[in-house]
Length: 251
Image (cartoon, rainbow, N blue to C red; front, side, top):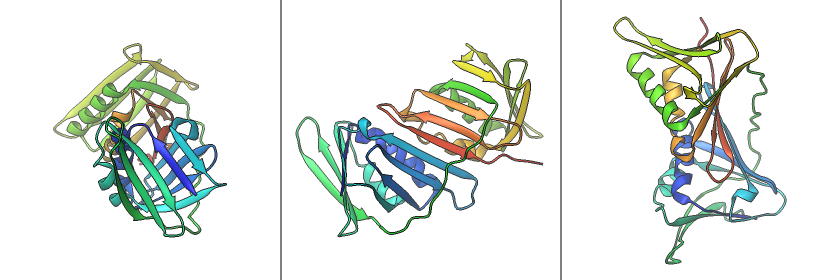
């Protein structure tokens, strides 16, 4: 048995949009401490880790541990029906192989319910990457969004380069070029590194996909290192976080 009530259904849709962007099915895990999903894109270029602590829910009940796989497109289509006054209710009916998705209006008390297939059984275990990344840069969400959109105008590859206590972001083609220089306080709220210099390139398309949950957060933290996967972390308003891991482009 698993049942949980989330305070803002309309904000949760940014999470389901992100999941539907990279995979057709997503495995979810519910424990006493955490509701989470770990997803690897079919081409293995992107991993998403979603973790929402049980205390972030208004109601949260689970017997032992539960796990199930959901079709992300159907999940996203339903959650997009939420209004800003709706609570979001998840109720896993294991015997029927269904997940009830309910919207309960906080003002009127009116509740709507939808059901989607929830497949149980052994789920493929996807382990989160354990990497030490030298550079940490923290952005306001709006600044991060603007940077990614600027990169899209310039080219297909983004180069992140840390040197002399500055973060340089570059993208270029034969016709266009984007250059950004960022330091702590302008506009980064935090910048640090354990090395003197680090440089790595990433697909702008993969970076653009990380904008899906941007409306659910105020800050975005980027971690990277030379020729290693980048880690992009979104703090979810109300508790929890979503992490993207994206592979580097290595010549």
